[in-house]
View 1 (cartoon, rainbow, N blue to C red):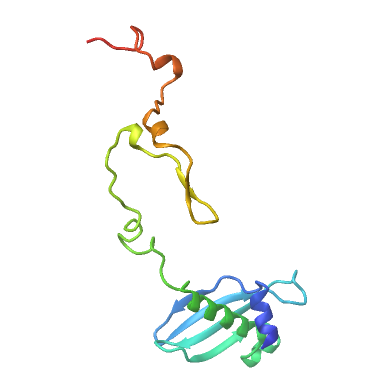
View 2 (view 1 turned 180 degrees about the vertical axis):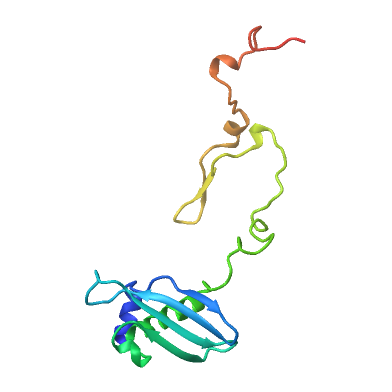
Length: 160
């Protein structure tokens, strides 16, 4: 058991793919051998009863895998258990119709440029008090135009 957990912790278990059949769910993965990392990975599959977590059978391409139980199979089961606990087996928001943009939408109302804050103007100190970076007066006097364009003259004022 410790060796199987070591396989899982070391990242030797590849991505797990699942296929649903009539009465079973097949999980398939490849596991890198621990003693000879450059050798091709072992092919592992596990069959579960549909609707339950009962293991029907398992197989691995290693020598011990022909007896239906080896450390590579256990490593795949450890990875599946971790994915289930962490919620990684749920569909992503982009896989569901009309779900991926629900939480990011917000209503944006137009404002004058002087009323828009482009930076965090306050920060919290270690004592928990807020220190203001830019006083409110500076924000109200902000003009994004270049210095020579701020003074109205005949060149930068259009007359209709």
